[in-house]
Length: 249
Image (cartoon, rainbow, N blue to C red; front, top):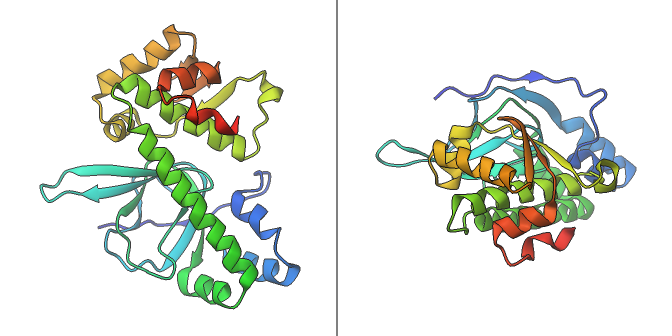
C-alpha cells in the first residue's frame, strides 16, 4: 500500500486552525514546546495517511479538506465508516494501532506530530492532558453526529443532516451567520460517488436529493462541489431529526 508523500505547506494568510487556538490557551512555555513539534503538511486526494492495523507513528489534525475512515471488507469492498473534516483529530495516541485506513478523500492540509513526542508532552503536562481530553470528548460528540446522519430513512433526510452538521462545524470554527444574512456557503470536498457511498445511496439518488432540497428553496447549487444553504431551519426540518440538530444555533 502506497503511503502519503508530504511536503511542508505554507500557512501565511490562513486563519488560525483549531490546534493553534487550543495551544494559545496554554502557558507560554508549553505553547512554544508544542508549536515546535507540529508540522503542517499537504496531502493529495487518494493518499493514505495511516493503514488499517498500522502502528500510528503520528497524530494529526485536519486543517483543510476531508479525510475518510475506510474499512476494507473481506470481499475487497471499500466502506467509508466515518469522515474527518477541519478541526478533527486522527491517530491513536496512547494506543497506537489504527482501526481504519485514514485516506484523503480530497486534497487536504493536516498538522502532524510524532506520537511518542506528543504522548511525552501530555504525560508531563496537566494543561496539555486537559486539552487532549477535551479533544477526545469532541471526537465522541462528532461520532454521535455522524451516526445521526445515517439515521434518516430517506436519502434526502440523510443529505440534509449531513449538510447541517457541516454548517454547525463551520459555526464552531468562527463563521458568523449574521455576516452573510444567514446564508452558509459550503465547499463540498468529497466526490459525489464517495458521499453517496457514505450516505448509503446510489449517486443518481443523491443527485435527486440535492435537487429536491434546491426545489424546496433550502439550498442553492452553485456547482457540484459548491452549495449555499439558504435556510438552516428548513435544513433541520428536511433532516427530520426532531429539531435536536439546531441546539447550537
